[in-house]
Length: 503
Image 1 (cartoon, rainbow, N blue to C red):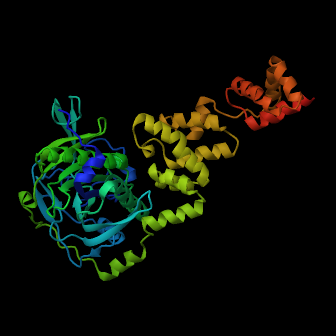
Image 2 (image 1 turned 180 degrees about the vertical axis):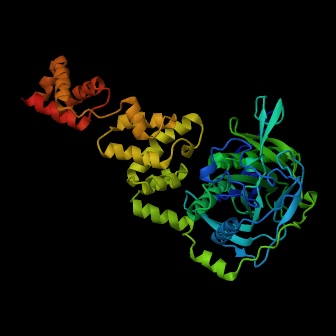
Image 3 (image 1 turned 90 degrees about the horizontal axis):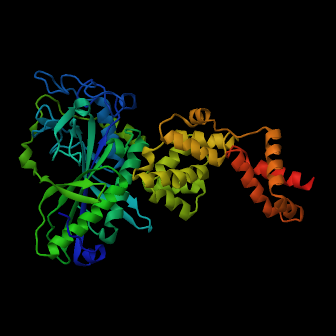
């Protein structure tokens, strides 16, 4: 049954939204958190077949013992420092007990009352220029669970599925879970704050080089907590937790939807159930998951097979000295370096393409050219397909595409055809151009012959050009480009048209 929604503005007039986020970051170490098995979050192992990146610990076999991944600890400390957190002088792991088919040990090794990092904050900036400081409660280390694929049914979820398949490749992948404190004062900006916060975490993670942070691959996952309380009430309302939202746009939409859904229930005299919610990208709605467990339900107790983690102060200061600039400062520097107008830069930010444009520029493209591709043709295809732009094409390929244009190998029109092939998985821009026969015609004799044929077919246009109406040349240029299947340099064709018309 479709939930009733209250108008967003009315909901904000009657209720105050309180937000909270739990962001899981998969660390890109070569091996897993507590064993030497390859880590599927590392680029070298992305394409591994199911259940091939495993070992006795990944499968929870008796007698297998965990050993803490030193690189994962260093990455976690760096992330904690970048979040403005204090780093614990000593912390320990705990067992979080619960049964699920993708948790073969029937417990997850995590951190409970002694996280590696705590008490931090992240500054975000909204499109309006409003700045907000998001308080961080903790960032703790843990291992990921395996992955279930539900086969059959119409939703891809366990309800209605004929059977489920489990892949333990992901079991044991190093994670850092970043938990905010309650965020007050969001008001009408609540959905945008959700998006901006997750984007800031993604930018920090990328700048540290500790994860690819690709939401469509699950490297970065957000659980969004939303509660409402009547205006003037001190006590917090009951929260819901929308799980594993996998795009910036979806985080924003999920928060807006939950505000409208909860407001309608409360206004009708109903109560909010403390539960997890599933986000449905196709309908833009959430649905009930399971009642939300409290910490006591997991029966936490110290992990007996692991020693406490005690990072030296020298290590912490070494990692602190290596920190990159904060996201807000980073954005301002890029805007100045690239020479973008406020509108151009905001288009990039609103499209969640800043990191894509930056990576494309780093790969050799001019800033304006990179912006044009991402906010233009690639954004159009992404919107048509309802996916994130970054999932369609690699920034290095966009830079290569622009290089082919700059060299004169491709025209803009041919480059768009090459991009189509790249998105379709046909290879790099150069490979697609070669396979599809996309190449600018540079044979002067062929161009002259095509121009002469077009002029002969349009004598009235030829006379207009000779009479000084140079703009009439456009019709001839269009005919030539059509005859050459777009594989001619339009600027050179124009030069030839004017030369032949005056002879």
